[in-house]
Image 1 (cartoon, rainbow, N blue to C red):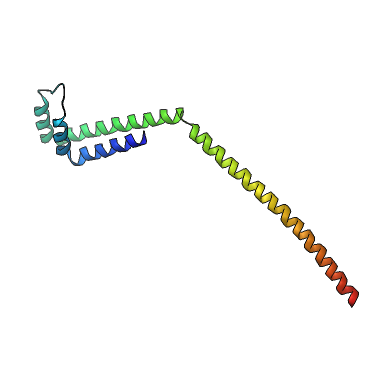
Image 2 (image 1 turned 135 degrees about the vertical axis):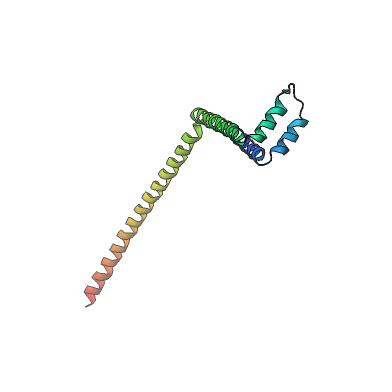
Length: 129
């Protein structure tokens, strides 16, 4: 779907920037019906730039709305990746907290050992003086 949207957006940009190229390529394609008013319409669009701009704006807004609507529908139906992402994040957080907890326990036991060593050294120093 994403690839299709990219292709459509590239095609749309090409039609805006190079309309003659797209018209030439689509003229080579076999069509079932060609309107007899087509040339007259093209000539009128060349004369009336506001009309051409209105048509482009309308097509652009229709494509944008259609694209957004399809994205919303797809995102609403396909939310497994969001749930999966949250699941992975929670698993990582739990692993990290467990790692911190185990490290805390090791540090506390090391502190107890150091305190015992310190007390014995202090006691020996007190006995020698």
